[in-house]
Image (cartoon, rainbow, N blue to C red; front, top):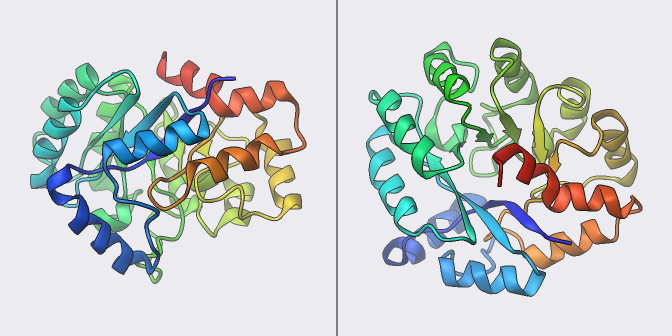
Length: 262
């Protein structure tokens, strides 16, 4: 069956080593490799992955356009671009039009971008995303680089999807990294997609089964979180789950293909 990775990160070659070092300091974790396109493709081939979402984050508003210029320049069949956007970027409407033409969604990492996802200052951006039907991938839950803050907790994400019911929201890390019990209680069964990145293989089996029972299999995507995790390790975990082949295929590719019209 086809496998699509819904959650990866790479950088331009000229800044990749610096990005790797900064990420390792922030997360106190060794990246599996230099986060560049050729290395990602190598790990994709090892895991039998056909295409990957490249999720880009602009830590500051002034980075949005240049990051997106680079992302759009590397597009090919194997890359599904999720562009950068920042809630404090003044010209967000024009940039979202460009994103609509050149990408499949955007990535929001509120811990890096220093805002709370339910901050009303972000609402005009969400309104425009909802209007344009551009999916948004939120980092959800605790961020290891800033463990004292939880700007994208399940209760905050719930406020966003309640306020914007037509917004296409993907909650990374099963809706709340290290806050999976809260995500199960507040987000499972709601109008939200989850990706499995760096989460499903860390959950207790009983908790994972409760997610499947409450949320179903139609709104869950496989994601690796490369370069933090080895894609093959994550694909092997899902292949070995005690669920039907039909539901594995939904998680691996059918669900994201349907959402993104791939």
